[in-house]
Length: 450
Image (cartoon, rainbow, N blue to C red; front, top):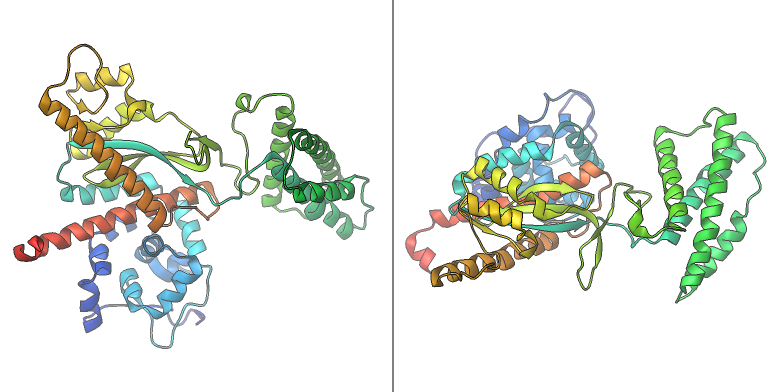
């Protein structure tokens, strides 16, 4: 149903019904009650009238849609189709459709993400949620930390794929199109011949290093020639009909050409801020050193865990050494939960500097013992338990978030949008844990024992 401006697309639910009673006693309702909606909405500016997602759903509705998308782990279209037919989702968002109303605009979630991207930061939202949830934390003196990578949804990048994608954009999508619209003769190039060679290269099941190097040399030369011809045409015709996003893409392609030209004569380790995707130029290769996946492409996150709840310490698309975050993480934990007395982390954190810091602050760690003095029997048991919790509970949370809360492959485009999706996925998992804990506290003693 189209919003004409005379009647609202949604009606606010204000009242009692049996359905609402069932909703409040379901897991959906319990998750809804453990999220501080008013404090989250206060992080946004005042809503504006007119078209757009803010005036359709309101602040609470926008945040609720993001939590629902992570909880249900579905696409935008599937979420809106279910919203039209599921009254529990409508209650969760605080907006109930009339019997003859439905949402037909499937771009609402895109506009919601765009609005949240412009007007709020995930750090501020996380602070609101921590302050609201910390009363549900029991063992606040135990701090666990580890790093993981949340991958982006891209095909596995290679230099040949990236170069050919840039050549296609420069020649077919821009240069040839501009020549046709302006009535200008196409400049001479070897694009057709290289297209045939590229097709033959792709069809080969096995490519030797010599063949790959030959393709890279040819494509670097072709791309450089195409960039020069396109730039010359834009200068002569005052930019043609290119939009701002096209000029931004051209700037990325120029940087790709410079980097690929540099890689022909230098090792990859000598290149910083290497672009691996034309559509997501902010991505960087994150070397993880795993057997089945030595390199991942996405955002690296340093995660802190307190009593099973996970929070983001640092989220960046550039690789960083997580062991340098220990002191800052302890300070952040002290700010929200009080001083940490026990700390669990893997061996990469066990540097001499971190050991001295933990000793000075009387923090017991699970780091391997150094020196002749051995741990007592009770200290060995405690160290083993902390290490077990980090290896099982924390690693298990990583897998759960990636498999069930939409963090396996981040499909949205944009640096801030990907970070927001990661944030909402982690916070949705936390809200489910909080809801289940509160529900268990309300159960009678005999049901808890059963």
